[in-house]
Length: 179
Length: 237
Image (tube, one colour):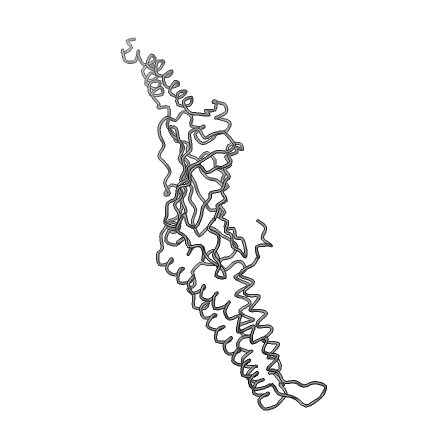
């Protein structure tokens, strides 16, 4: 009896301080690009992004991805043109990676370095500001990625022979939850 | 009862190892900036804070971890080529459509000059041949450019699985008005031309030439406006 108890206690005490990596999942998201043209503005939105975060050591790694063809602007013709312009059939996913300190800073403004894969190009956005708030177990992150067409070697699409502005900021609203 | 030496030491090993394990957890937490206390960690369940006892680096998540289907992540260069051909053809369609507006508007304005005069019950005065020919030439040019423009849209590759949404639906629906209108207008114009060439007043179906042309141009203009709707000043951002 004592031997069994001893074995149990021994293995119990030898359990490493880390077992699970406590992954976080993206439960809800809205990603919107904004496009400006002399005649009109366009917003294309995707709610189909998926994401995961794992924390270990002094950092948390996050990965967020969305299919390029999931961005809808309300006009199917324009959306197809967008997919063509950003080479979305050849590179169908937009992938964002970021690392935050572990534990993640408290609510308020947090800064993240983003690695964005899009349109066959990799782009680094340093020190992008996001707003973080916590509600129960969920964490809301909002912010804007200052993307431009030239960052990803995208020929700015034109309408009535006039090109859109180079800036295509992407608004981000995400809700994360422990898995 | 004789207890083996190993078993006798087990509780001691446990008692010694527990403080070290707890200390390791505390070090892992305390060494990081903004480390919340244990209660806060449990209540907020922040990424990282919930696993405050973690000391080992985690594997960064991979795209395959996210659960996208292979169809969603698969590269399709053939589709990209189709999209590029489609965009090219629709750009030509757009440019030709804009250029077509010029002879169309000119034909509209010269329509009045190509009309016979019949005022105050006096004798009918047929339009001059020059006016008629000029108007007919503009009409012919308009029709030729219109159908060339239309061909670039009709022949553009269709993308499977695309459901038409938004202003493009109105743009396409209006083609069912200006398309037949662009067929009927020249036919009625030729009929009217022949009647006027014979010194007759334009009569019968030919008398609808001007009205049909007007409706056709209005539908064509609306079709162009539809694809640029809503304009910037109406956009609520």
